[in-house]
Length: 448
Image 1: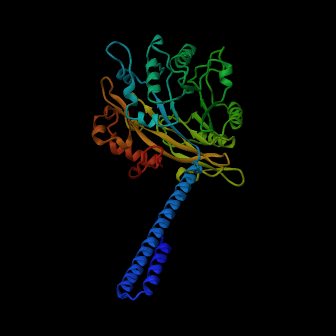
Image 2: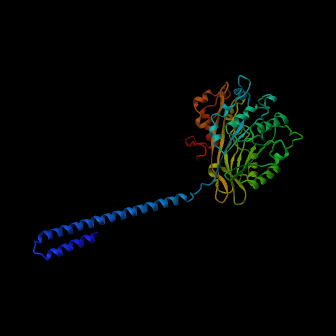
Image 3: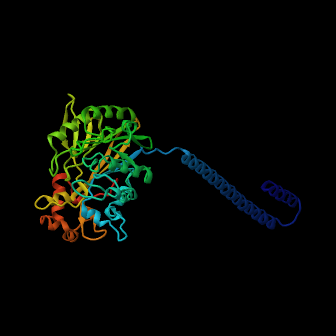
């Protein structure tokens, strides 16, 4: 277009130069034409430059979009698989506890026992409870200490609170004989088949099985034993009825657990009642368990809390016990041990100094992780102190995390009539002394 306009102007100029007419107007016209050409050329250049910039921007935008799409298609780094575990101590159905769940129609309801801890148990993958007393049902009469028997509704409340694994190997497992045990097994199988029942068995085949819980490729074996059954012999036709803490059986089971699972938990019913520290007997068993592959020990029975420790294998193969806070449990040769979780639910009939200790229990809260090499280890853990709160009337018995308890609640706790030492501060001091609990560092479960 520019070349055509320049040719036309040039021809006109040539023609006019051969005539005698005035040239000034032509020169002015030519100058104007040149100026016009210059403007048009500049405008054209700007148009071309603008178009080029737009095309370049569009191309860059296309590349950016394509790059973003490719980035989004690239696999993100996956977090290593994890599994959360909680366990609570002894559920004792003392007579006042049973009465707190009795309705006017004669039936039972025990949801109140776990109302304030349910959120913690429901959140865990593996939620375990030491069911101290047998669930023999009303057919065998509901009784308290010393020969306990609980209604089936207690089992219903446990299942509704999120407990998916119930440990029955306790010294009270045979309080109602063979009938109590078989009633209990039949209840769990018929009413809550998804709940795992450990420690008692209805057949030799079941007794030979090692329970393995699995999630996201993490396999955890759990075994449960009791030191005895209060002198009550095992049924003659059911010598497998209760898992007893016997060395030969323990080693055999643990060796099999090592073959079946990535991580092994042992839950022994052991120790000495009302003693706030582990005994030589417990230490010996703990080291034997560690030698045969146990990774986590959670004990019950003393009815009071005991220290949380770490067993560390030294270079010479011996085991050293340290406080849990001193041990790196992500390293091989380290075993986490809760010697006693104490009571979860109870209303003891005891009177006098030391009874207040039975009101403080704790929850073990452990997170396992599996690394890229397939090793499963304790990624984090904490101990959550608990308080049995006792008031008369239906629904008056419940359990609070100590972090949610208060002096106002403590003043209403009926246990003060049995031990005047009981107070909120008493509970805090006990947790700090035995569990190394720090009230200023309270955490929510699984957020260590």
